[in-house]
Amino acid sequence: MAAPKRRTSKHKQKLRRGANRWKKPQLQTCPECASRVPGHIACPSCGTYRERQVLDVDLV
Image (cartoon, rainbow, N blue to C red):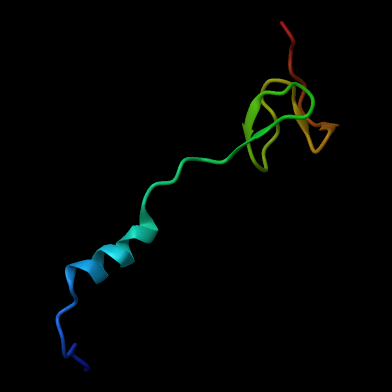
């Protein structure tokens, strides 16, 4: 089994682990009601997805 010849430096470890850092979710604007919605889901406030009505939402 292969063993590493050199110790991995702290800088290389941090660069590798930096790809796993938390990123804020990308929110999009709903074209119908202009509320902020995560991508690829129906808008919870108006019930539309890709400009089609897919959910029955009571507008109270």
